[in-house]
Amino acid sequence: MIDEKTPSWGIEPVPERLRVLGLFDSLLLWGNLSVSLLVIVIGALLVPALSLRDALLAIVVGAVAGNVLLGLAAMIGADARVPGMVLLRAPLGRRGSYGPTVLNVAQNLGWSTFELIIIATAAASLSQHLFGWQGKWLWTIAFGTLSWGLGMLGPIGFVRRYLRKFAAWALLVAMGYLTYWAISKSSLHAFWARPGEGGFPSFGQAVDLVIGSVVSWTPLAADYTRFSRTRRNAFWGAGIGYFVPTIWCIGLGILIVLARGVSDAQALPGAVAAAGGVAFFALAAITIDESEKAFADIYSTAVSIQNLLPRMSQKLLITLVSATATALALVLNLGNYQGFLYLLGSFFVPLFGVLLADWLLAGAHYSPSDVFATRAFRLDSLAAWLAGFCLYQWLSPVGPSWWTTLVEHTHPGNVSFTASLPAFATSFALVTVAGLLLPREDAARARRGSREPLARPR
Image (cartoon, one colour):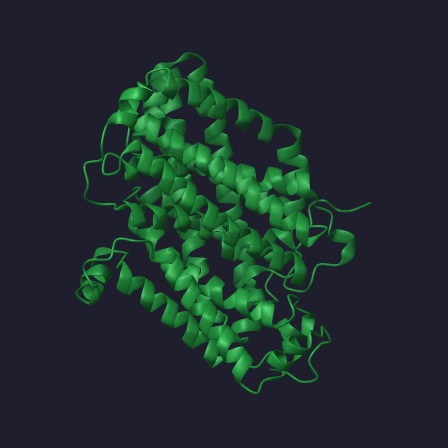
């Protein structure tokens, strides 16, 4: 009998006996991970600067582009059967993968903290409504503990013991009611006819924001799809499973800000709780569901650290990361994470361009030797990643204020289209050209169409 917990499977390729997640499992996993109060509130960032029509178009364009990349990342993870940060050893080299690993640990820890803060805020609103007492600190600890417990289940147990049995269905009902709650106060014709006010974000920046919210999952995708039965299941499960709820959630966020005047992640729970009735229970379901995102971030943080410290216990890492995120959630306030999303996109969009190009050059297949027999650094791929990142920041300087102040003088000034796709294309093209022109065994192997492992490390 398969052990559905599998919490401590490390950086080695997952064996066939544990590749048990089918298409339905993948759809449930990624569909649930895409539903979040934080994702819903992204809609508030798009209006009133954009008209409803342009905002919805930006969501669709960004979701299509982002989920194609996410689906491909999921496919590569299912092919190589190793965690996401370990997978980057193939294009960047063993030590070259340490840089993105540190970035990924930082982003996952940040997201874990953000998720626990919004969960505790929502739970405190419910508690205030029921008992006249918020107890936000208590809810932070409680949901931090729940996220730790889900992390200890591991991906297989999480899907089969938690999502399949009740969590996914409760969430579907909750999202349906929240949609009704927003639409019931909406004048859709008036909203559609109202023009955008202009300013920030532009249409292209809105597309980047949506892409960034999706692509922030690409470094984590392989952590879960390494347990998929087939590459096809992984691609469609992640691509479609995350795509539909993304459009639903961000579109719902637009309606909530237009109809209900709620534009802040911390204000949304209170507004829904005040409505009472079924809306109250819908909020409770989504609040509990939010712990799934914290689970994913905590689990992937632990798995990413194992790329640096492969012998360290995964259970211990999950415990330490959970405790750290909970402690940070107790002392920090939820700030403006808009720049955070943009900055993550500027790192990970071109990085995925590097990974995809190298995987295709390897014959669309990574063998264990491609991942574990690499040299320390692959400078050509690292340079391609840096070039894509610099192009992104040149076209659209994003990030914390200290960073944008430093780089905004390079901005050409009249560019308003998306920076994500040019950055991705640049890194992809540079790696492809280098792989085809440089006298390297893996490039020669790709041109021959062979899938034989390399005779010596790259």
